Image (tube, rainbow, N blue to C red):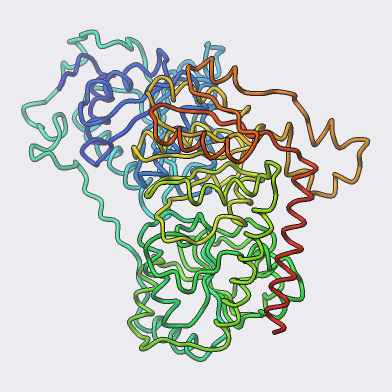
Length: 592
């Protein structure tokens, strides 16, 4: 382990300790001030390096990797506004519980606020969006300080991973020299022989500081209390919002069977699809809960809520309308913007389910769950029949088509605004294992291409990204990663020439201002973007072309952009026709 000078003693010890803790991936942006970190990572064979030219794209790429892997990924950049470009992804990571290690290089304190180039205030740069933020001292080659460096690396890794996971920011002020030039005088007081673990790390290869992360479980008294209460209430509902724990589907399905409660499963909860028991999974609620009378007839007595708060308005409205029900939040935070919850259980969701199941015997069957299933089946049948009857390139139908096109164990990454909502409405519950990902923490449209490519790079799975044209335009820089790292991905761009979601909002009723300020037509097509980055391209103007393009992309190597031209006004009309047909079928079933 080389220590050419004090900077490299610091950076090498920090990187070595991260690798000992389990760091496997680092995204690095070019820069001079960050040289000690970048070179130390380059020398460490245990960490795979991903180089990115654009800091914002790099941050979202790292975010996508960390989200897919459910483990910390390091992100390195130089000083100044380079660090500020990471902020949107840091905010998303904080809000969606994704572990990131944000390592920013900085100028030394004597240059702060004195007009030095490429210098901004980086101490606490990300504010409350960082789960923990620490500004390191200027490097010195002393045994106590190297011990501090190693311990801080272990703490940063553990803090990022500890539930609720999130981003940790470590700021490194480096003086020159920034290159690995030998400076023997830096080590005149080094007591390496007397303190080998501080300088070289533990001889057994284990982390310098061991941090145990325990999963919180229910107390026996709480488990018994909740079991008694839930056993006495037949009209219960389980709501599963976005989350990434692969253990939850089986655990929550088992609990639902014991309680006899339907599961309203957002695709991003990972509960809607898969090989687990989906008997009580309801997949069409977003369509039929839009009907106020039907939503009122399905009034619950109790609601168990897992994961993040659901984005679709019908389900959010259902929870708000029935705030009289005992709504229980289970997980790692207070995710309740409608303030309808009456109890919060800060416990690991899987442990919660297992603890309750341990106090329940048999399975409850009754008219309540049968009513939900009958309504859901009628709604799903009407939805499919209505949508498959549309010949235009309807955005919602893309997700029905993908149900059969996606291979087993594929990742479907969706953009925000309309795509994530259409995923909720139109992707059915199927036995096929599909992992659904999206940036649903801060819910921005930026960085989606980079995040999806990061998930592709991290997993090696078949990744299909569906996003809108504005979101795609916002992150075309991210396409360089597909070219540079030879990634295999399918990117489906729903090009409706503007911001499609605004056409569903009241602003659409004001034609004098709507198009220039909300619809924002741009007149772009994206063949040239594919050519710029050396990627495949196809334009799908009918459903046969769409199926062929997706199948060809999934069967081949490399990244392909599939552009689907859509009409915003027609899209609104077709959505409303689907909602009307579903409501009619569901109400007819309910009245029967």
